[in-house]
Image (cartoon, rainbow, N blue to C red; front, side, top):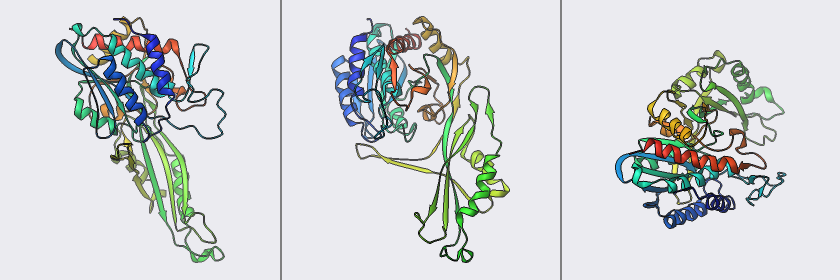
Length: 383
């Protein structure tokens, strides 16, 4: 069966026209659950956290291949000057514009129609497609529940790779530094201890902190993202508390202990509390997701059998992918970084199309991605 590109395009337009920030994915999940059932998926369900799973069974028993996407998108700030309606899904000049076209509803539509086009009589195993919730705020945590239900042997993350194949990806940690001073009236600052002043040597020292690098994943990153004093606003009072937040991009093998330890050992950090932030978010079903904001990096060898199987499938589909790695964090932080399940990344568009004004997807890339997903399915699950 050939891939129905017209239907794929129409489905993507319908998805992009839905606003689905984290916690508000329900309309998309309902749309896709109905579509999967109508299109003939063998089993379709929504789990307690609100993630959607659809299964297509091959004719013979075999491994489970999970193609994963997320249904949430980042928001669109009021007043930001988009040239195209972010929820219009307008097609112009061979591109579809709109929030989520590249990150990552395009890959999702491509996966659905690729799986439908697979010849089930020639598949040994089953294909699962997941649409997880809350990925933009807690990478991989909703996928954990999906994987406990599906038990995949292999995972494909559909985040953008520009049609190349990724066999690794950086992780992410959110680190909080805290200093405690002593309040006083700002007319008599000598009677207090300014918590912001206590923090300044730590901030300066971390600017000079040496970070590791990886040949595949690139350099680790430590970026200061906010400084908050308490009380805030500080009306005539010396701040008694200061919290600084850092975004740390992780490399494979790094742990909470190794990352926080490298910071705590600095002399300038004496007396500064260092901790990994705790994430807690409620899904549209009312379920609560909780997890430390430490999402591990991951990588598999270029010659890993699954990497090579996916590569062979892409080449059979007429693509010419190079091997690489994600520079940002994805749901693979769980599938590969925590669970250790063989994982690759493949999807349409470039990483730089995520979260931007006038986000778009090239239709040519969208259709090539569908062919690529089909190629991976046929290669990995061949009889």
